[in-house]
Length: 382
Image (cartoon, rainbow, N blue to C red; front, top):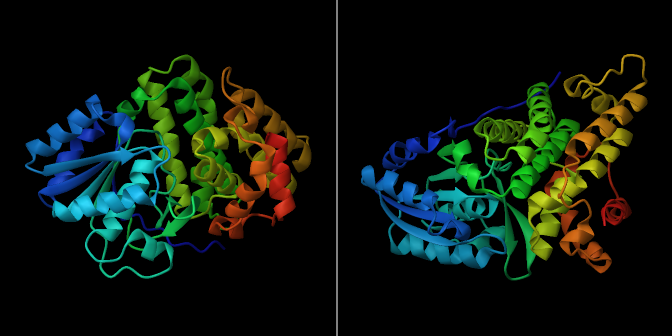
């Protein structure tokens, strides 16, 4: 019998114009906010709307927009100093994974003397985190309903996963309209990343009957809309489906765990400053192959949701049919298919693997992977 603890304290607003809930959520927490925003959103309509909504509810704001691709703990230190100087009562993250992770870390290190480096070095926080709100501008933040968040340690240049108990967002706003500013390739890549996370969570030894249901629905929704999203990127219904898949995956991860592909992708992204969504999309077929050898029975169960007839096939044969079907559906023209296309070189791989193997998610793989196994996955994808 599965044993689980399912507790989601965050209020989640989902749907078109869900952003309108921001003012009420923020005003319930106080009247001074530090808004941590992706640098690419500076001067955007998203920034204007966020400031207008907060202003209408008499929430004063200071915007910190120095986060984004390549940002590290150095930006978190700056943000925490700015939050203290402005006597912020809450932190609001707006953007993708970098901005949302930075917002969470700033919330955890503003009210006391503990710095993000103290937390990375294993010291406990002196005071509870400030409340924070996450506003997603991509379809996913797979960490948002856990107590973990990825950061890059500026002292070493290495990506880390920081465990911050009690740091889950007070509220999460998922408005599919906010994703319309993403390029087609990046929108598709984030959706492929969501499929990777769902496959890993489904295969994980931590998975439960509830998380399995969420991951299966994630995979069905995401794979079903991939090609439509790539061909009609401004169609609101497809953006909504992508955001639904992202939310379902995050709910599943709150009870299960990501796996080897996510570990490698986080390491590649943090070590080499490569967008995590693209590395995840490239690694997806190789993690499916690993799943076929580790848990062919589970991979075979994906067949019905993909419309594959496998009634007279063995689990191994059915799993192979599933992988072929997924490969066909994720084959989007113009998407990178090799890590080498992103600038990854063979001599980068040992450091990437060593860093990836330090992540706790590796403890929950369906079957263990040795260092050589991780290297082989990367070499095959290079």
